[in-house]
Image (cartoon, rainbow, N blue to C red):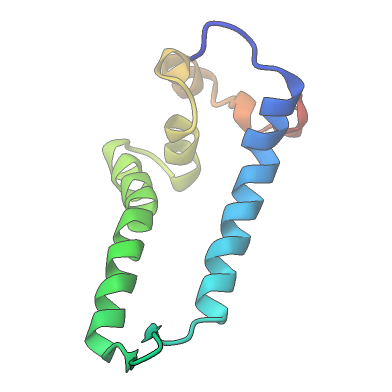
Length: 115
């Protein structure tokens, strides 16, 4: 994808650090949610429920595309769930080999633990 093998730091960040931090941020935002309010020296305004709902819908819409595209990609292929998953997470040049041999390199632990 980049034309060269990224350094150890970037591989660790892309595989572990970033996904974990994003999940922590999203979960903590939902758990510690309080209605939005505006406080100034003269005013104290609590936004109505519909304004908060619209804000969460806008935020959720950007995150919903990830599972939506995953589901869409799964519907493009025929076969069992495992075969569809294998084809979705593998590059297209490996698809014919996966269909022929049923061996998926990405299902091996060594693929995910290689740095």
